[in-house]
Image 1: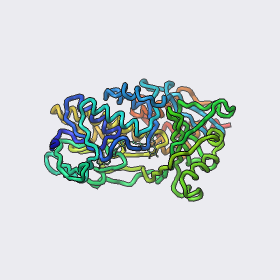
Image 2: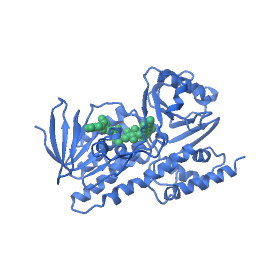
Image 3: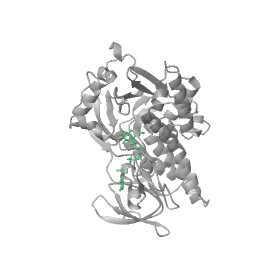
Length: 417
Ligand code: FAD
């Protein structure tokens, strides 16, 4: 009974899919969203950046997100061997929102998807894309529905918003190895019971993500992402071999790692671990191409770097914004150069983040972040990137990320006491 053709088929109803669907629907473009699972469903990626709020607003979803009582977030705090430093996102170089939220993704993704449906978008839950033929004038998608019956859907254009599912990269053989080493994350949701009246905990700020560096392995780090209900997402990222010295049981490993980092050990003395642990590895991914005149890969379906700067959802939403602006033009009869206008534009910001991710693991960026007397103007420029404004080329640290970072890291090293 359901429709067998659409202007745009979107694979996946995560943040990039829901936002893209709403942005297209607003302009009268016909979309069908295919979503493999039933919502709510768990997803990792819980700390947002202020830059994504502008896309949420453009998709008319801001009030729904604000109503959902998520944890307010206004910055990022870092801790390494007794040194604390924090970035307040309002104190940044680029204009724009300076606050955001930390969200349980099961909830957040449902809020966005429900809002898209409220606006008139059709989401087909438990419909899985299993095959695609892009050879003809229109693409032909083979979909398995909730009863396992397969049907075909014809689309003028396909947006792959399948996240770690990476559906089109797999079906169209676009996968390429990532240039970043394989890392693994183990994580859980804890009841934190953080008591800020305890002297050592006075600095703790629930409105910020806390990134802690392992005391003896500086490329191993922890995230502590507070939620509004007294729980936190707590996770550790390291190369897979690192975990070999820890208990096989992931909760036991997380607890042991928490005890090893003095700041977290103190903060989480009373924490409870009622939930099971999750793990994800080898998540960094790359593709041969991000688009053609028939499809575009959004968010994680294209590139995924590393979670250290919480950039995933922001890149995902930014990709939706750029791709849908171009699609609207294309459906209005204008010609679009997808490589230049989509891929190159998106990659500008992705590559900014890449430089900072590489700088984090090489130690250069850590030296800058933990420097005792930061130049305030430079700190604002770096803060802009940490807040997600990685496409603002008026920021010298966006225009030439590697060069600027190396320069400033050298200065920080020279002035170290
Ligand atoms: P997703 O949210 O993954 O949604 C994809 C949807 O597609 C899913 O609902 C799935 O069911 C559906 N799907 C898959 N295959 C099919 C199919 N064949 N047919 C139909 N539907 C399909 N990002 C942040 O912003 N902040 C963080 O703090 C953060 N932390 C992270 C920590 C770790 C350890 C990792 C690995 C990632 C982290 N990320 C973070 C990244 C974040 O998880 C992703 O960037 C984000 O979820 C991408 O959103 P998306 O819309 O592209 O895809």
